[in-house]
Length: 203
Image 1 (cartoon, rainbow, N blue to C red):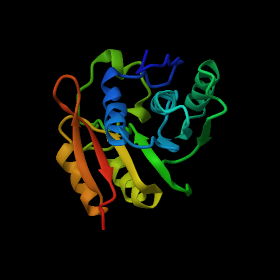
Image 2 (cartoon, rainbow, N blue to C red):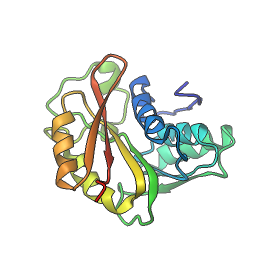
Image 3 (cartoon, helix red, strand yellow):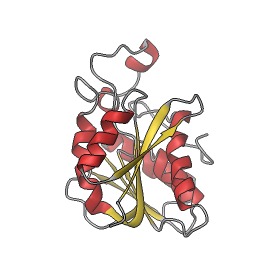
Image 4 (cartoon, one colour):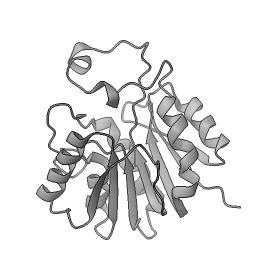
């Protein structure tokens, strides 16, 4: 399982990683003691992993999952039905945040972040969708597209949490600062940087 939910995957769909739970932990810490998020956006939702985990955590919340893969979206919709969350979760074909409007209290995103120059083990390389893993020579291409859209999509008091490769904390933080966001690094169970959270600066 992932967090508190069972996520089914099919061929060509990214398998949930335990390290990705760091994103949900960062969100829980942000909303602790206050009101939980009402609207959640998951960019590159895959089989619905992060969105459905967030909806399980906050029963009042509704969410939207975006993915470029029809196959992943079908898998996500099936998972939402299995978890009895189909009333609260919507899934839509899309290209990151392109054409999206509205404001979200929580934005989750596990984009491709492996540089095409990096070596992967065959169990990942041969079985998982390349489009969900690789992001240009330095692994940052998708962050460059996603981060500039975050300020217009974040509701006041909201937070965006993006998964990163463990060497990318500073690079992704710089992209966030360039978009006038305040980045905070979060570490996984192994102590490696695993997510960068971003808030709108209080001004």
